[in-house]
Length: 566
Image (cartoon, rainbow, N blue to C red; front, top):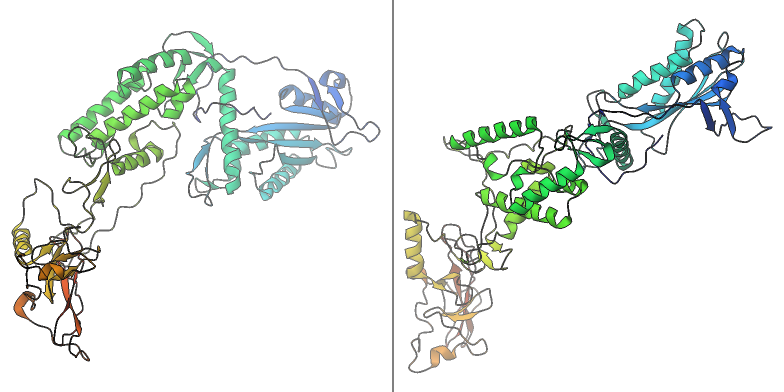
């Protein structure tokens, strides 16, 4: 019988009931049979008692089996019966769904049952084997048709091997033993199934576990009272059972007090195990070998399990918030807002933590006892080197632009200043310059002029002092003053100004070289262009070119811009 779909998700390995109550069996079976004689064509009601006086060997065999399987066998006719056999593999069947790369393999402890319909012909068992029809209950064809046909052939072989003796019980037992092996579907330890079977199989497995758990009776490990399963909860990570009211009271107090590390199993064996693991992690961290463990927290119950237990949504949200806050504080890679009054984490750090918490818990949540954890991705290939130094692994890539989750400030990860764009050279406030970086800084101060808008340093190769940055700003190369785009040369023609009649000062550019005139450039009053090059320090800034524009009496050539990073 397919159990009803529950509203709870229990671990795939639940403890056996300590006090199992079973309803009294009945020997009356009501079913709609395809073998009903055409004259009646209605629902047939048969009882084992009414057939017990029959002298037919076939009927006597079915009556005997009905007493063995009172809940699984239904009599259709005196010579026909249907047996519903649950499929509970031991160990659970590990199923993978290759067509769904977003789903990890799952361990299925319960599969939709098989229905075996036995039709015993008049010549059975002396001259003919039983006619067996095998089908899967429900609409989930998880067992291949070839395997079903093989089961039917094996039942016929049983009849031959027993020298034409009654084989209904032997056939049922054979199918049950095959079901415990999951019909040998997992040849190499894992069975590959069609993607459309994922939801129905997982839901059936969860529903069956829930129903069996609710039907049992358990002793609460906190209040020591005996309660029915629907009053209790079995923790997914260890299957220890406690009543829901005790768990709600205890976990609510912990969350209100901020002690999120205590939201775990209360059984003494689990507490001792957690304390031993915490002590080992602390010892590794003290020896400098606990880098991975220091980035997370001891695993605790996942949020969806707390909702399943019965905690309020506000308490669950507070639990997740505190868990994230403590994990961010332990992570050395967390980026914080530079404002002293804010100090909120950056969006990139929060996103990385959210992703880590979703992927199988990643050490933040306790996983189900029989959860199948996918193997970690292979480490990145080392960077190839041509020296004798050991190969280096690529560093974690962090974007310069960061945004605070609390005050929404956009800031630079390196210099902690408000965001200044990708091309400005910056460094950490407490960073010490290397000799190469110091020489680079001195060269930039002596030979470049920063754009007044984006602050990118511009190195002029040759041409006039009217510069146009790629950000669209017109400025003077001598004094870095803004120029009016409509009349940029007024700055150089204003008497008394710092740059009066200095448009062509330093025309030769860096190094004192003047480029040869371009081919075909000549004529009185021809327009010329100056070109600039951008310098960036220590790889921190990208280069952008600025062009100089002028008009002067005499022939001048148009010069192209070149890019350089110092």
